[in-house]
Image (cartoon, rainbow, N blue to C red):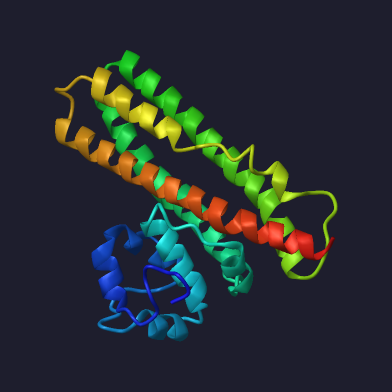
Length: 230
């Protein structure tokens, strides 16, 4: 359908089988588990989600070479874009980052002070960077999107200023995994250290997908809306 690798007639369970990481984004759409053999179209209809938008996110999330063209972006119902992005922010800030922080704090309590201090300082700096990144989007970019969707032209902001500022907040997570692998004593909770690294890597991958969704959907869609006012 419409150039997508996935289609609305596929079973959602088959999409999850193709890319198990898609299960992480289901709560952001409000889709519960237990969907059986229902198709993507049926599940989207039951949850009041525009099926084209759902497929757009799934395809970007799963295929790095999938790049939606301008015509596709302009033709899709994007009313779910802002709720989806805000739900993603809540997931990172309220679930995944606190989960990793609890893991890390437990390791720090069992380690020597010199290692614990370095890890804690590094992670706190990362948290602040993430919060600042999301704060900018929620205070500048998202209100601009909402205003445009409501038919209001906001002359004080343009999405072109967002693109060069869109930093890779997953980079610091890669640095943290390297620090743990290289310098953290191997005799301190080795199994939990490995679990922590896997959690960090998964978060890093998910943040990369989040960035792609913003760059491949949010930015071109806002550019499209801005041009309608000029």
